[in-house]
Amino acid sequence: MNGKYIAMKNYLFPFIALPFFLLGASETIAGQDNSRILAMGDSLLASHKISGRSIADVVEKRLGEPVTDRSVLAARVLYKLPISGSLGLSIPKQYRPGNWDWVILNGGGNDLWLGCGCMFCKRKLNKLITTDGQSGRIPKLIAKLRKTGAQVIYVGYLRSPGVGSPIDHCRNEGDELESRIDAYAQKDEGVYFLSLADLVPNGDRSYHGADMIHPSLKASKAIGKLVAEIIQP
Image (tube, rainbow, N blue to C red; front, side):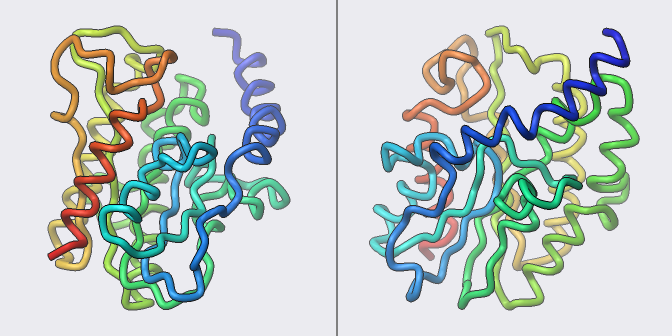
């Protein structure tokens, strides 16, 4: 792929994605004044927000208490543009102070798929989280959240075993990203890594949307149930 095209694509993408943010990424869940659960992340969490059937909506219904959802479509962990970043395309900037007992968090997929241009994956991966799992932007973000007293559930990404997906070429990097996050979580009792690697049966398309990237309603419901089960006890 032409390097100049990749650079232009990465520059224009935030402006292309911004209308989608305006359509469905704003905070819509009521009751945030007494909410103890915050959701931050990308389209894995933000999918189906408009219809009220996102992962956070499922968690809210299963627990019977409000969830404040600030996740945004196309958001990244590494994000430099100030205006669109402050609107939520920067996952760290989605955070707002509150009496959070739990933070549901995900991210990193857009940084690897759209951010590295299939050229600098290793370097971008190490910026997100180092090989030992202790440094990088993701550990820094989790540590910041933990200092508030909140417990963190880091949600991994869906797989598409037996079915093609436009992001299959990033599978190895995605597996490595999650392995490092899991290693980080193992060293902190207040951090939970929720792997979705085995959620989708081989050849089953029903857990993905038509693009074979984003979660279907079925997947959002299943993931929300798993998240709620971590919080419930």
